[in-house]
Each structure stands twice: as structure tokens, then as C-alpha cells.
Length: 302
Image (cartoon, rainbow, N blue to C red):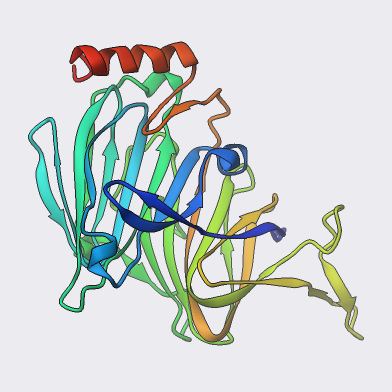
């Protein structure tokens, strides 16, 4: 096994979106090559209803898939196809926008006013950008939770295959693996990730040390022990931070003093041109212009 060294650690950036929703942007436009097939990720965590109750009123999507994962509170949603529902704590919605959909998402806090969740955008390859829209709504009870050890590590398998356990979301173009991982204080764990995939971690509770490259050549050793074994240099990630990895087939992490909880996401790169206009992502600028013409003419929904 070869450990993936850390290439970069970046804090999520405070951002204002929708009708005045204060959130943290984990990554976006400038990171597309690093996280392909993913495009954007937001952490919409807040304990003050005044900072999120405006929500995300009606807006279009085309050419992408959106993955909404709620940890606290709820998200009410509706769309131009007549779908409507509520995502509660622990629930997941995977929406394939395909050729086009209009929808709205309105966050609601729990009894203490807390709202916590994430939205991840995954790109669609050119052959699927104009596919019919569809939803996969997954209640929390259907998401498998497993432990790799007897020391309290918990792994929610939202999507993909982890050590033979498959998440309930399927049929996704990027073939992603999406894990929600909790590790107790001081514990060290390793997680397999296929070498050909791009992968990132997002630390949102506690902190952890991830294996890091000690120089541009990717040398992993900090020093050699008397028995000849090597100690990996590590970099601390916490406080809502994105961790980007270099190549390898395993991620090594050691939880900090308060433990850690993070998302570990990987997918097969699409490696196609990206033309981006807000929630519409195509391959060319002409395709973007066509989508905007259809929005103006009322022919966007087919």
C-alpha cells in the first residue's frame, strides 16, 4: 500500500449565497482540476436562523448532480417537475439535474435553531449532461454504518463501495465513494482509495493529522527509527478545512485530542472541458449561452 501524501490544506471560506444564507465554501471554480469530477462543495452550518432562513429560492440547474447531506435541522425542497419533500437529520438527496430542472431548497433549524449540512456538486460527462432529471432520496436509516475496529471508529457509507459495504445511492456517473468518518481521540486509521481516483477530505469536527509530503518530491519520511522503520510526517487539519491528496492507494489519519469527524470523498476524473455559469455547468460556452437563451424563452425545462 502507498500512502497518499497531503498536497494542500485550505480553510473553508465564508460565503453568502441564495437569499442571504451564510455558509462556508469548501472548494469551487479554481479547484476543479484538483477535485475532478467534483465541482463545488458548501458547508451550510449555522446556529442562528437569521443567517440561513432565507434559503435558496427557485433557481435552475443543468449538467450536474447535487448531493445534499443533512446532519441537523431539515431542508424543505420542491422543483419544477412537481417533486417536494423534506430532508431530515442524517438524510441524503442525490439530484441529477441532467438537461435541466428548477428547484428550491429552504433550510429549517432544529429545536435549538441549529442547521447543519453539506451540498456537493458532481460534474456529468458530456454524454450525460442532457439526460432526464431524477432524484434519489435516502433516509438516514438506510445508510449503513460500520466500524473497522473495536476502538470506536464509525463510517457511514453514503455512496460507493467501502470494503464490500455499498452505500444506498447508486447509478452516479462519477462512481463516487462518499464516507462520513468519526475517529476517537488519538486513534490512527487508514482508508483505501483507488489510485486512479481524485480524493479529498473535509474536516468539520475536531482535528486530525494526515500523512504529508515533506518535500516536493513526495518524500514521506520524517526520520527512521532504530529498527529501520519510518515515521510519517503529518499535517494538522481542523476547524472546517479541506485536505487535498496526491496519488496513492491509502489515506492515513490520526485523530487529535478531541477526536475527529470528516467526509472522505473520491471519484473517477471526467477530464473534460468545463464551462460554468452559476448552477449551469456544460462543456462549452456556446452550450451555456444556449441554456441562458432557453431560460429567457421559457424552454429550459423539457
